[in-house]
Image (cartoon, rainbow, N blue to C red; front, top):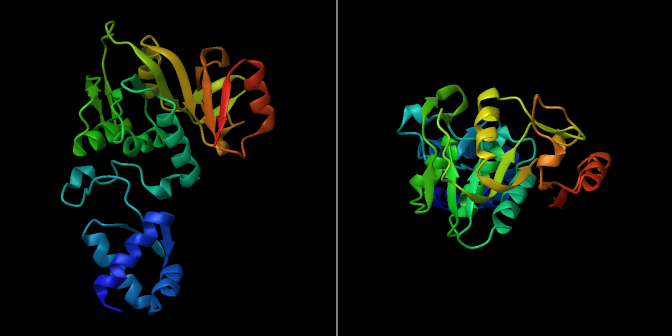
Length: 255
């Protein structure tokens, strides 16, 4: 098999599986581990995948190889506890929106994954989460409003002291580091403060929380159950917390 054919098969495999080990690629390509490792190094240098220990992962974002300041700016698949579930949550979040809705999107790994599905829509997006904003700009997304302010590098946020009283949207999508009977919690203080501001602009709040964070207390209380309208999570979520959500009239979507 030629090098070009191997590279094509590796990228096709990653498009389907997101992460591949050297052993999986050896079995797929029927070649030596040394050959596979060379192919991974070559494709990583070209910005077509990301080399990880003992394998490779699909790149979620525009190539940052030529822009040193963008390295580690975007979430990586290996950052996710359950990438496939988070991806399903993000897809469902976009699917529930109606044509030309105004939506607010907060900070988070799962909200970042909404980007690729937004490309297929005419939704009007308001956000200060720079990885998502940069992704949408790089892809030419035409319906984007950047909520501006001071750039805080440590949390990838634009923080504004101003309120935007003229903004209004149907949904606000937020992520969290935990969700319990007490509500949605978040560990990042600045993200917490900015998302509290966004609450003033949206009709409904939708929390995107992977199942591993259901039943976990994740820091500062961002929204109580009475402030949440919907939670989108995975099938393995803690049933006791799901029961509490239903009792509080919070709609739950399991993906």
